[in-house]
Image (cartoon, rainbow, N blue to C red):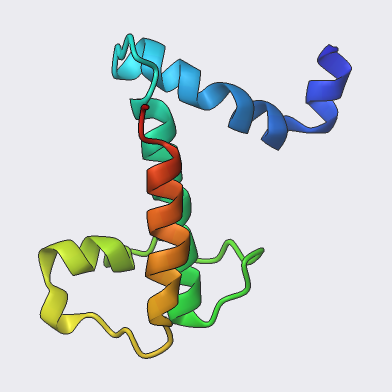
Amino acid sequence: MFCEFVRHPQDYLHTWLPALLDTHIFVDPACILGSVVLELGYAETLVLRVARGQDRSDPRDLPPQDGSVLYKLLTDPDNVNLEKIPPDLFMVKILTRAVLLLPF
């Protein structure tokens, strides 16, 4: 089993990081915050890459020095360039991921 994780360290990380964050960082007995933080990070990276016209597998300048698109939308929304971001990206990708994480 260990060899399987060695061959796929990214899968191992994606599997256990939410639980590790919940247990050791957030101390969240509901085990939700770790997944929420990671999903927000995935959505943020997706929006950033779309805004730049950057390929999804291109890790250059992540995170950006001047802050991500979502960070800029929160802190200085009037100065965010949204030309390359289709409106449905926010509706489909970000909101869908957020809804999937809500406890029922």
